[in-house]
Amino acid sequence: MQLDERELGNIAVSVVAIALSLTFFNQGLDVKSGEFVFWLAAFTITVGSGFVFHELAHKLVAIRYGARAAYEAWPSGLMLMLGLAILPQLFGIRSPFLFLAPGAVMIHAYRINRKQYGLISLAGPVTNVVLAFVFFGLVVGGLMAGFGAESALVKVAMLGVTVNFFLAFFNMLPIFPLDGSKVMAWDWRVWAAFTIFCFGGVLLLGGL
Image (cartoon, rainbow, N blue to C red; front, side, top):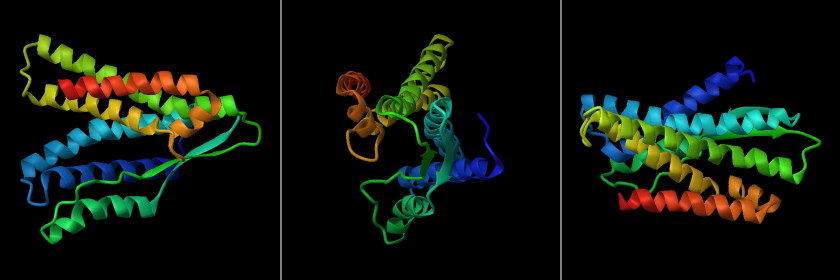
């Protein structure tokens, strides 16, 4: 799998926009410089990695099925994302939600059947679950190494677990153009089993 300069640029712009939007959305515009750097890095590592590997998983599986696939940033989605995070705060209002729509992998193929399309779509959420377990391993490893629950390492790793389980669950919603709609169109049983698993992960994290 190769990434050309244009695609790498689109990915980089999207990750930076995601990290900036989440930092301002969660910490406000008056966030101190030290906290700004910390949360910008934290969201880049957790949400940024979840987003990038999610999209690259779609691309890799699509290419294996003979399709042409490339990530494309959505300028309107990037502006909306940053706008919702910043503009309301200029008027003393905090937006109750943040719409993350930085871009997606565009797939061009003539001979991809429903099952293959379903597997291409499933690859992204599955990757997020794998990343969630990787971050969970960091949480456990950090605690065993003596890092406290409030340490930067454990907090960022736990954020990575939460974010990636949520990304997997959200993307499995059976609403077009989310991945879940394409997985369900292929096999509703696969969709139901994986969605329930992701929902269980979200509920467990909520309990923690």
